[in-house]
Image 1 (cartoon, rainbow, N blue to C red):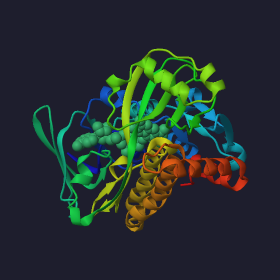
Image 2: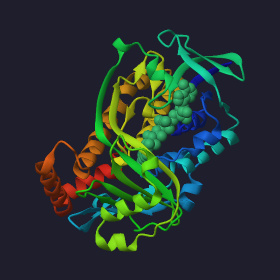
Image 3: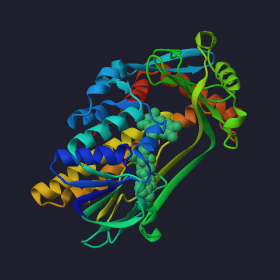
Image 4: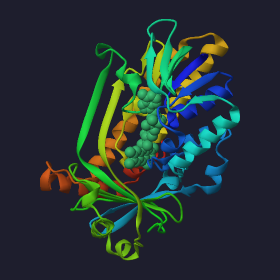
Length: 389
Ligand SMILES: Cc1cc2nc3c(=O)[nH]c(=O)nc-3n(C[C@H](O)[C@H](O)[C@H](O)COP(=O)(O)OP(=O)(O)OC[C@H]3O[C@@H](n4cnc5c(N)ncnc54)[C@H](O)[C@@H]3O)c2cc1C
């Protein structure tokens, strides 16, 4: 098989890149290790920046998001028993949209299907090869039969545990990492959200987040020790702990119910530099991870796909390598700002085992400042709604 761009991974980065390339007339094939159902079953992100929604619109896949997504103009920060609103729209003129990653993925998969593009699901043993030459290729095994795709470029969109970054020789890559000493225990439940806007709570017992997927489906998180297992967290214990970390009014309003999904996610910040290795380019979680506190992971996957698609378009339409040469630096400049913001939100809102009462007081001072200074509030809002791309 031959294509212009072989994309490894059918998560948001790979699927969006594939559709953008298709819109620019650039042929591409996606190889995905899992089945479509498995990819769709992963409950992850839920908050889209306006720029991400605009990209869905650009490829004609945004209709359902506009119909079903919930547009939010603000968020609330809770600390010391009270809630304080950050007016995102008032500060920036922009909003964010609640629309689950599973829905984004489904819309992108349907768009791909309608475009008649090739996606090889359940592709095993995928290997990006010869990307330091002018003739890169990707080999794989599907249904027990070995296959090979010859291509001009490889896009590694295969997430943090993917094969693309792992195929680069260690001397060519530099990794930057911060692993946080706690995780997020999250549940999904078919109960009405406790508040129309997200509540981020800093509490002496640990962080909590009240978010949602729709007006009928809630997503709640509590900070938990990394060693914890979901078996230790029956629903009743979860609801009880969540209530204890919320202000009284919110706790009283909380509607509880059986969880339909429950998982523990470790929190880490990670960036691999550069994001280009000869004719292979990394995009999304394959190159960087942020803790979900800033709601940036999926949105960064989208901005990487945007930059990379424009770079390939320039290469094919204008016979210029300027775009692909600039891709890594351009993407990393936005990535590092989102990494900084996600780290800052995480640092301000979680209970850290090693910073003691001094650290807790500094957090409260910061929250007090952020919710009372127009400049600080605007800075939070500007980053939260997403820096331009
Ligand atoms: C609990 C949680 C909450 C989150 N909340 C938010 C949020 O609110 N907002 C936000 O923006 N982000 C959030 N994120 C992050 C977001 O989900 C990710 O950043 C996003 O999925 C990245 O997309 P991606 O396409 O780069 O990677 P992925 O979604 O990981 O997709 C990679 C794909 O590559 C495939 N693959 C892997 N290895 C191979 C291989 N060897 N061969 C072929 N295919 C392979 C995988 O099966 C997968 O389908 C959250 C994440 C978690 C875990």
